[in-house]
Length: 409
Ligand SMILES: [Zn+2]
Image 1: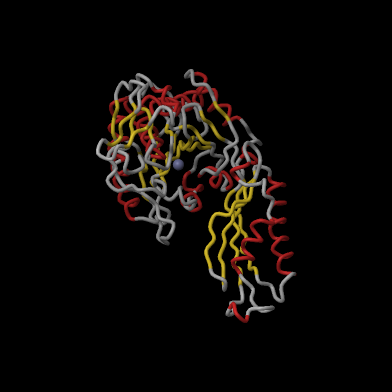
Image 2: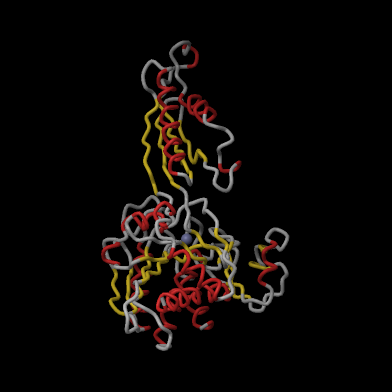
């Protein structure tokens, strides 16, 4: 399996499938369409059925029919095609076989290395096959590693009909990194009873808790007057923006919180005396605290507005995704199934509340419970990103083992 997995991963990684926040097309970049169409051909070639590319949402879906006599729940496996907002031009994956535990030279010309002092977790990969970038791009193991593991697991099932499995559905979609792809995912068409994304990090990681997430967009209107005659008439939107930022709880920011602690984060702010546009994100695992945070934020805007001659701060506040746990905990059997598969393969589960969202945070709320399985990748979204072949193989084995255990239930 290893050789095909490595070849497949490198093939996927080399294609630039970066998504684009500023594009309004679906998917946001044409390279994702081209990639999806090629992937659909590949899925047909390895023998999957009902292979479809859906133009309206950019998802490729396919079916592996059951080889059982009895009926078991249909499992979905999902990964995303796009890569994060980082250079993805001319990705040249470097394969380091039998890694010796020393600093990894990514680019001799530019003098770029992954150093063991900066990244001590490299010690876990001695003797393994480590795949890195050439120091000029990201690797895109997030989520090409997840894709390669799922496709290779499907190929393994087809080549080894003695491996028992019920019906499996797979989906590969665009624009995860900008939080849009899953919004268009068609759960009714997918027809699975539950699913897993392969989109987490280090081997062993498993996530079924995510943040609840909202975004707040402020438009602050100032009154710009010549500073020489500004007394009692100028309202400096830049200063109002600064005062607003410092009126929020100063300890509740990402850099001072961890675990289950939520936060407010100023994510962008641009403007002049005349007008400032500021964007905040609001995050919390707990639904009630999340709602309280949003109310607090809106009340602070009101409070500021009352101090002006007219309401000067406009607020657009909207939810982005929710904590999948609130739904999944109604039936934890899909969590247990995955963790049993990890243990059966000798993989120590590392289950933590994720301080972010996954495609599953959105898909779960569309009615398909979808926790998140590891891919084996590390240092995501930058030039130090890497993944081990052994980690990807373990992810593929988890897919196979989940299906086997589900078949025996
Ligand atoms: Zn990802």
